[in-house]
Length: 325
Image (cartoon, rainbow, N blue to C red; front, side):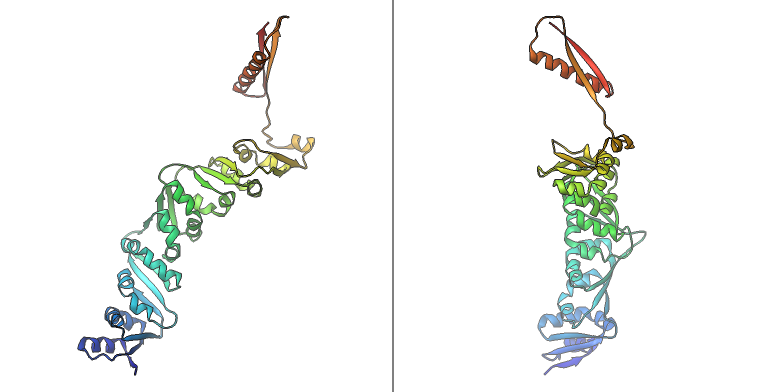
C-alpha cells in the first residue's frame, strides 16, 4: 500500500518513526523545498516512491541543496526546473554537478549572489565540459576565462556559445602563444576571438579549399594583425577569382611555404584597375667587368646579392653587381 502525504506530513512521520513503507509526496514546490533535507533522508531509506509537484514546478534552491539532495530531486515526477541562487565560489565548486542537471533540462537559471558584479573565473576546460550550465547563468559579461593557448583553441567552439549569449567578459591567453585553429573557426568563432583581451596571434591550419572559402575572414584577421601564418594541409591549388586575388593579398601573404595558385578572370585591365595589387619587383643584375672568364656560381651569387640589395632599398629597384674577370 502506498501512502500519499504532504512534505510536512512525511517529514513529521519520519521524525516520529511512523513513516509508512511506501510514500508518495504530493505538495507545492515551496513546501518540498522547505522539507527537502528530510525528504532526502526518506529517499535514502528507499521509502520515497516519488514526489509530485502541484502548481509551479520551479524549485528555488542553493547549490548545496542540489548537491546534497540529489536522491529526492531524482524522484520528482514530470518536468521540473531549478532556480539556483548562490555565490560565484559555490557555483564554481559544484559546476560539474550543475552541468548534469542542465543537460537534463532541469536548470531554469543560475543567479550569482554577492555585492557588485560577481563573475565566474573559469578555465577553458571548465567551459568545454560545463557550457550547458554556464549558459544558464543570469546576466551578462559575468564569465572570465584564462588559460593557455592550446586549451583556449580546443574550447573555442564552446567559448563562442558563451560569447554569442553575451556571457563572456574576457578571454586571456596566459602563455601568449598563437592559437592554432581551422579556417572555418576564424569566421564561426569570431565573437569568442573578439573577447580575447590584448594582442593575440592565430595560426590557421586547413586545406586549400577551406582557406579559399574563408579567405575574406582570414583577410580581416590579417589586416587586424592577428594572423601569424596559414599552413596548408594539402597540396591542392588555391583556386581564386581575380577579385579574391587582388582583395585578399594580406591573407595570401601569410601562407607559409610554397603553394600552387590558379586565378580565373584576371586581365591586364583588372590588374591595372586593382586599388592595391601590392605587386613589386626587385631586380639584381650581375655583369662581367672585363673580357676575361669567371666561374658561373660566382656570377649567380653576385646576382643574388644585388637582388637582396634591391629589396633592402625598398623594392621596385634594380641593383647591379660587377664581377671582375
